[in-house]
Image (cartoon, rainbow, N blue to C red; front, side):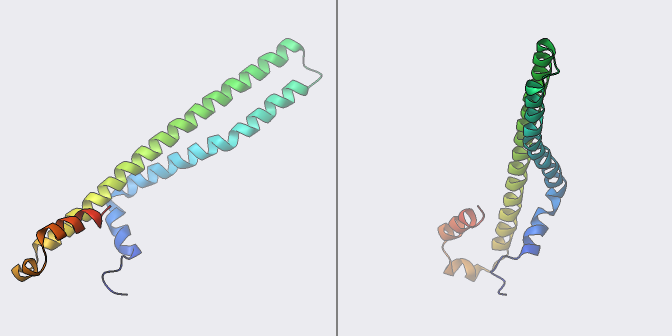
Length: 133
């Protein structure tokens, strides 16, 4: 492969300093998705309580209210996990892009003077911005 082609190992190398943050984001992602999968199970338990002929009316309503409160808490926790995950991912992504820009800028600065004669500075700045987003 030509060196101008991005490679997965190079990209993972840039992301290595963010590996702890990305692992934490993965945990929050799993927790957020799990909350979405638990909700139908809880609603099914509420429905079972609703159709249970052995439960007195007051006990039935108390059980349904309790389960629905749990559903709301689980849903809110899932939303919070999703927010935390997306925030961590956004921060990690911005840090990776900043690292890539710094590497590219350092590489440009190491070029010979003749390089700058054949490449316009505006073109280099444009490439620095557009190629790293």
